[in-house]
Every structure is written in structure tokens, then in C-alpha cells.
Image (cartoon, rainbow, N blue to C red; front, top):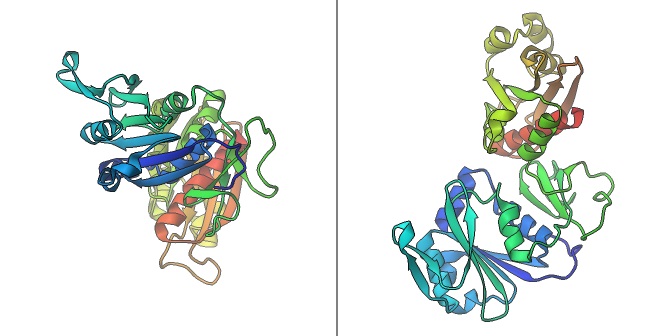
Length: 350
């Protein structure tokens, strides 16, 4: 990421292979962790595998911030390398903790992390496996003594080079960090969702809650990806009602009441069909966002090449908006981009 942030500590982020697997299963990339650390004040973030780092004790030296995410046994090896004794805690069935470390209570699952000062004048944070994305403010405050977070703009980005912002944590999104106290938007021309580093599902959920609405998803090319992403959010039941995966034309007609004549006249990948899908899923208490497109690698045509996607959103007040997307990348990237754009469309209407 660019050097728009004020000078701060260098952060070292170490992840075990088990941690990487868990993050991937939760849909969280390392790019998000790096960006959140930058917003908390790190001048830059160096990442590495914890297993390889433990084989080189000198690499564990921390004069700024050190963050390790791993199994408890590996975390204790980090503490030992920093000269911390490891103590048993009888009240937790023989659980261990670094001597003199400040405990940090985490949830999902209930567990304890630890933070302590290092011999090199830095600070180290040990995070056991479990959710770290939705509790990030808790452990970021432990690192930076509760200092204000810098703006972290989450931007829509369809490019492959990441030129629209500092870093691309996933297909369809980019991130840009700003100076503490700087209230302006990111560079002109960048479409941004929020400036708090919120994941798309967090941002959309806040918009829905503010309107006392729930979301429904009418999905074709995303195959349930929108509902899956929203359901990652703790407390998703407050804002997620239901979803339909209407991959076939027959399913669109049967489940969402899309008129057969619309599909015959305009094709399944069209504004008319996307709007009909959204309208068919909406009711007085639920907004609905729909997506229909060609994710590839086959199925495209001269008129509708791979990456052509129509999204539409309908609100209970009768408003409906649609958008044509021309996306690029692999099938997986196109599907992720579609989900992000669909959330952005519905959120902007709210």
C-alpha cells in the first residue's frame, strides 16, 4: 500500500498454515489483515509463514508490532523465543499462557489471546485460531493503545492491476489507506463503499438495519454466493431473510415469477430479467438484489461475452435499479466481483 499514512511502527504478521486455511474458509484474505494493521497505524506490514519464521529465531525480533495467528502450541514457541516463560493455568484445564502477558478475551470460539512488550521495545500479539475478522477492533486496540483508526476506503475495482487503489484484497475490491484525521474521499473516480475498512457484508448489514429491512437474494451466476457471504456475518439473522439459486430459466419462472416472454425476448442475461428477478423476490419487509450473468469460461457470445452480468435491486417502496457489469478474470473472480457489486448496488439504494 502507498505511504499516505503517517510514520508508524513496522508490523510483522506471521500466519501458520492452519491459520491460512481457516482464513480462506472464512473468506478473509491476508490483504484485509494487512490493510487493517495499516489503518491502525503501521507504516508497513511484512508477512510470512510462522513455521518458517520459527526456524529462524532472529526473524522473530520485534521492535515495532508482531502479530502471530496460529495454534496455541506455535504461539507459545513465539513467546519462548521472545524470552517469555510459559505458564499453565489450572483453572482452564491445564491451558497455558505467556508469563506477564496481558490476556485478550476473544469469541467464536471463546478463547484467550495475549499481548506483551518485547525485549526490543516492540509489542507482540498472539491470536489463537478462530474468528479474528469481526473482532478486529478489539485486537487492533491492544496493539496501538486504542489510538484512532485511520480512514481505510473500501473501493470497487474491476481492474487487474490494482491501479484504482493501494491493494486488492479480493476480486472486485480495492483498499486505500488515508492519513489520520483526513476526512476527504479517495482519489477522484474511485467508487467507494465505506471509509472504515468494513467488509461488504458488514457495510450492507448496517444499511439494512438502519432501514429495519432484511435482504433477499435472487441468484443465478453467483450460485448462492451472495447469501453465503452475508451469512458469514455474526448476527446475520437480523438482516438476512432468504435466497433463491435460480440457475435454470425454469427456476426463474417457477420461483421468482419471471415471465417466460421476458426470457424469450431478451435472454436470461438481461436488464429485464434481472429486474424481474429482484421484483419477484421483494416484499413489504425485504429488499431483494438479483444477479444473472455469464461467469465463463464458456457460454459467451459477441453480444454478451464472458463477464457480462446484470444486477438489479428492488426496495419495498417500489424503487428498482439495475446495472450492467463488464467483468474480467477467472470464473471465481467474476462471481466474487458480482457479489461485491450487488451489495454495493443495494447498499447505495438504502
